[in-house]
Image 1 (spheres, rainbow, N blue to C red):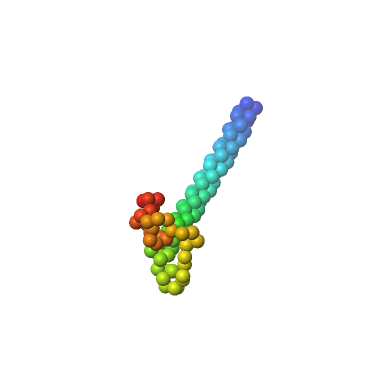
Image 2 (cartoon, rainbow, N blue to C red):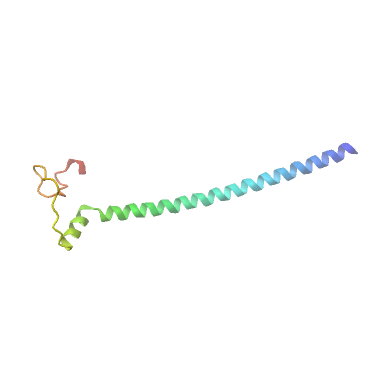
Length: 96
C-alpha cells in the first residue's frame, strides 16, 4: 500500500512538472513569435528610411533642390581634370 501511494505521488509530481514545462515552452514560443514580429516591423521601417535617404540624396534630386533654391554652391577644392560639373556621374568610375 505504501509503495502504491509513493508511486501515485511521484507520478502526480512528474505530471505537474511536465505540464509546467509545457506551459513554459508555449510561453517562450509566444514571446519568440512576438519578438520576430517586432524585428520584422523594425526592419520594414529601416528599409523605408533607407529608401527615403536614397531618394533625397540622389544626384538629380540634389541638383533640383540646388536649382530651386537658387543656391550658389561651389566646390571647396578645384574639380579634377575632365570633370565639368561636381556631380558628373558619367565620367566617374566609382559611380558604376
